[in-house]
Length: 405
Image 1 (cartoon, rainbow, N blue to C red):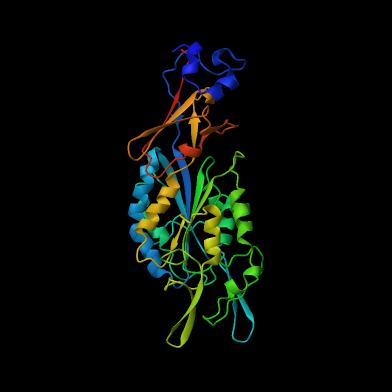
Image 2 (image 1 turned 135 degrees about the horizontal axis):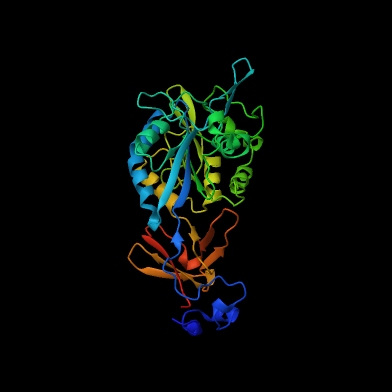
């Protein structure tokens, strides 16, 4: 099709911006004067998955329930919503510190130097730690290794601090130090999204301060972390830190967050209740009988990332199959894609095949795509907007270019 027929291809708004003349002739144009045989390429979507596993003494059954459903989780990840998926997975624990007030009124502070945001070693079949700290999606032993990683045991801190563990894991000195030197350097990839999945039955008690400002007591009827929440680092501060991450090329890192935590089974609300068992009284979250403490901060963090709380579910479920499938969908449905071999974004057409087989056509010219040009060592990106937002169940994303030849 000749360039002078562009009025049949572009919208009025695009014509007002461009004029009805060939973009081939514009100064600095990269539009070819003939159709090229090689179409634009949609790069595989890269996602780095960081599971944050509560390894306190109440979490054995919950860890095993996650392990049981990992085959379905990985299968859903690989389906990918129409875009090839390239992921890796690592595990840290919720153990950073534990400050405990003893019966004589003195404080005992315990640190966890082999944890504190460090990627935990992948274990071999005999249960012995190896030098591996994360697993690639292409690894034929991915499932077995992942299951062994999730089973972190129950000897960790009873003062769960997932937010602080994540902060330590992905920012600052630990994130930069090479894995061979005891750090996490090399886990987060340039151009990759980060999905954090927190699995815990207790409230977050995170603080950047040392020594930690809140002491746990010996009385289970007292929820010290919730009662002293004003002494903890605000959820919003952690959220801003996570959203402000950049990769090694200076590009903003897309961060997603999901929580399986102490919230209500029926409506995901966070609300404290007490329950007496024998001669002891425990603080739990309402409608979550196996929780220890309400999930105020856990709920608040999930809501910061998704106001609908689609990324939040209850640790008190009898199984986590559907929960993990929902998290897999969160991991695979991105609202942006890398593109290469795209000469001019004004002529880009993206066809999205929906779950029902219908094909939705999107373009920069119509305003339902936004184009971000490439940078140094960074691919260009197309962002989906408005009615063209990608959905769970999409089966294909195809980029084409209207050519002038």
